[in-house]
Length: 265
Image 1 (cartoon, rainbow, N blue to C red):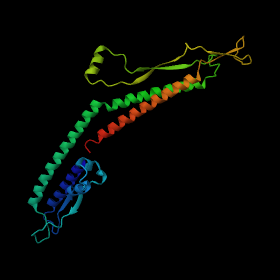
Image 2 (image 1 turned 90 degrees about the vertical axis):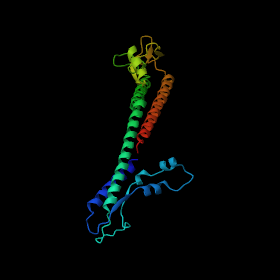
Image 3 (image 1 turned 180 degrees about the vertical axis):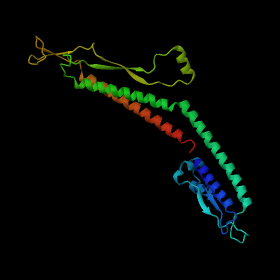
Image 4 (image 1 turned 120 degrees about the vertical axis):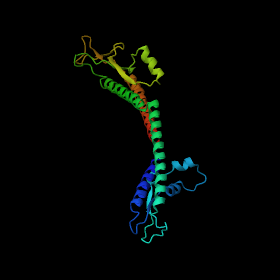
């Protein structure tokens, strides 16, 4: 639709130029061809519907084509073929077409704004981005656990303790009136956040008999971190899949937003 509006604007400039040169000897009127270009782009495939033909058009090549009208016969002796009355009629007709196209484009953009508002595209981006951030932090903590599986002495002199990440919904603490308002006005998700990273004090530390170890106690036992590699790798796979799922959701929202932006083209 915007291509047709561009062509209408070009035609308006051409007609205005014709009217300005009505008394220029030898001047030949100019015009802009768009309907014939559009017809050629649509093709003559009878097996395709009009919607399919429009979808297959290469918009980058669909432009109005300016040309000089030598075919318009004139009785004037100076060779000028501009008919001022005809140009004024064409100018008025073209202006009506242009105004109609602009009104349609404005309506399409109004519809787009409504769609974007109701579907909360940018809110969807925020939600999935929060999921990506949370799962990435979870994977970082799991990697730290694995890396410190044999750390028997930290900065405070004690063995490393396994860390656990917990999540909670963003803006979870809401009053009843806020929840009611969200439901009434098409509730949208608020995402997720890391609520806490805490040390695992419920899982027992690993005691290994190794009297030669510098951190062995008086009985020859060394206290190793309560990190189970199998458990950590299982959690890492789970976090990785959650990260991929959030990434897929983000790309789906992006694809929907891009399709929405095509409205009005």
